[in-house]
Length: 297
Image (cartoon, rainbow, N blue to C red; front, top):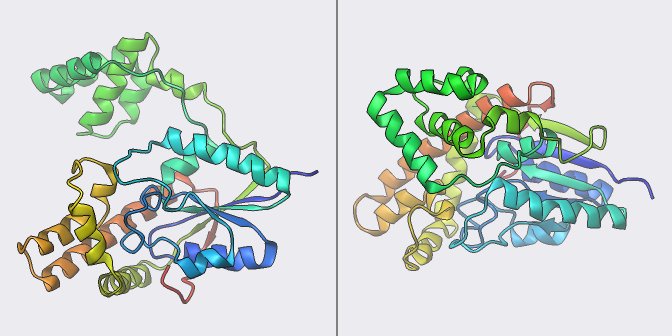
């Protein structure tokens, strides 16, 4: 049996990814697989704009709302979940549509995911202590002795990436750049198509604003109330979803609904802008489509 088509559909929030995927699935019988780090979590269907229950009856959907908010999923864990799923779909002869806005997920599929050993906490803490003691300029000189490629590529002020690169080199005896250079794509070249939805920015921002209003009238406040009631660690990924902090403040009487709405709209537009920039830089050779389908995504 020949390998079924795999199509990657990337783009910023509110750009129309899910609606486009449904349209393609209706024509091809494809299954839709989530590539959005927040839509993994079961607790926030409305606030993360997961496909609706009606959407899910129109085509098979996978990796949507399958993770409890108390869990943390990394890129590696997502790839370990999606690869056997793709093999199952291949065996069935069913096409796959991988849809989302998390660029690192797409990078893992098309460029590979470095199998870097765990770095001991002591090494990470020592690197951060050096950075804080010496300052960025001196720390960068240290990093050039063990990983000059990483030092040159990391933007000014990015303490987290600088200290991680240094800690990896010191703990493993091999630079982070070397680890990454030895990676292989998880999808074989030629087995997939790829496209980015890149709408006009003003139209995208308007769609973001409208989506927030729809979410707030459609159950997002109740979702956050239930999530807050669980007393989870605020550092968990689900607790950092756009809108959770603002709605928790609303529920705590700290801000008004109007203020929460404005703040979430701004945060959503900012997030969409970051996604646009990421896909423009990281997926420059992908096919582009600029349409905003007439739907909530």
